Image: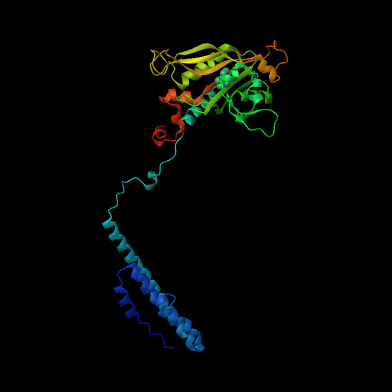
Amino acid sequence: MDTISFSKETFLHELSQVTSTVELNQFKASYIGKKGIITNKLKELGKLANEERAAQGKSLNEARAFIDEHIRAQETVLYKNELKKKLAHKKLDITLPGAYLSKKPGGRHPVTLVMTEISEIFIYMGFTIEEGPEIETDYYNFEALNILKNHPARDMQDTFYAENTTTTDTLVLRTHTSPVQIRTMQRRKPPLRFIAPGKVYRCDSDISHTPVFHQIEGLMVDKGISFSNLKAVLEAFIHRVFSPQTPVRFRPSFFPFTEPSSEVDIGCILCAGKGCRVCKGTGWIEVLGAGMVNPQVFKNVGYITDLGDFNYSGFAFGLGMERIAMLKYGIDDIRLFYESDMRFLKQF
Ligand code: PHE
């Protein structure tokens, strides 16, 4: 083996000729890469006699350290130069928004916004939240709510029926959130004060109906609850979601599970009661159904055994979220909520 003929001067001279980081990498490899001059010599050390090996090894290692140190220093110099050139070429505008801003952050769906806002209003009034299944039995969706088979009230809600393999009772997609009244009353004793927000299903589709929509059910039961409590709670609620000046009207109506029953109208927000297309010239818009819980429902859940027992009383109400969202945001076609059109959704 030749003795090492590494000349620092030659190396430094060669190094000074290198003008780019790419070139520098090749240069470095030619000395201390896998097949570099120094590396090869180090591999051959084993062939030497002990004494010579120690001396050669020492000077080779020194050479390698020298090379490494100078290449590193030069690398920094070249890298900085290259960066400087790049930056001079591509002017950097530090006022540009960061790249992450071009990725649109998600937003809440208008129905979710309204549902959250309404839930918060009731929570503020001391209501808790209850839930129930979307696939219901005929019993909970109808029978227990005093909507008997063959009763014309069944036609008020066009029902989706579900295939049934496990229970003997007919299964339906719940047509309203009222079955949560029954499920909660079976589980708990009065006093009760809760709302039940959720999805409901009806076989219906046009400018103001979609097969899936959202309702919030409300129920308050205790000793001595009266229709004035119902009026006070619902008026307070309407004045919160719309405005304190919104006129509210209770109009007699019918629901099998409430007696007496009422539909609640608000003065048309679009024409301020003068009469327009949205309120069909009446100046009023229906926003919810409500009433005093029918004693038959209390009997069905076991709160009372005799229909003449007025120990407990309560009120219930149900309102459609999409309807409220349409009025709040001035939307004239309910189907817009479910078309996933970004131009629509981005506005909320
Ligand atoms: N469940 C009724 C509907 O969907 C609304 C309602 C709820 C009415 C509670 C009165 C009391 O039409």
